[in-house]
Image 1 (tube, rainbow, N blue to C red):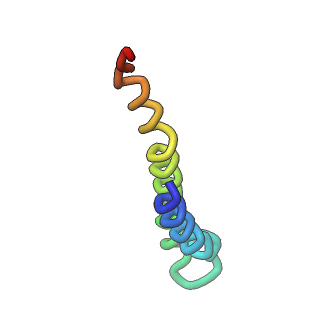
Image 2 (image 1 turned 135 degrees about the vertical axis):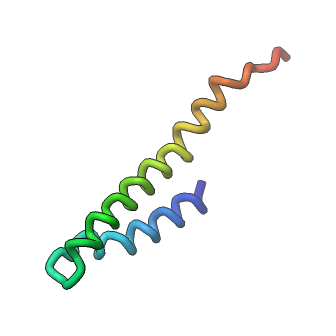
Amino acid sequence: MVPILMTSLTTVFGLVPIVAALDVPGGEILAPLAAVQLGGLVVATVAALVLVPSLSVLAVPKANP
């Protein structure tokens, strides 16, 4: 869990200035691209940390002791 969060957070911290940089030359092209990448990263992180473990608990039957 920690490596996934560390990787995602460092990428988010790197993309936030690009998303906010609309007044610099080329910013009108880079900001939407960075916003899409940021959204995909957030969705993928939530899926990796919450959705996949939840589905695996539901999909794998419990063993009877």
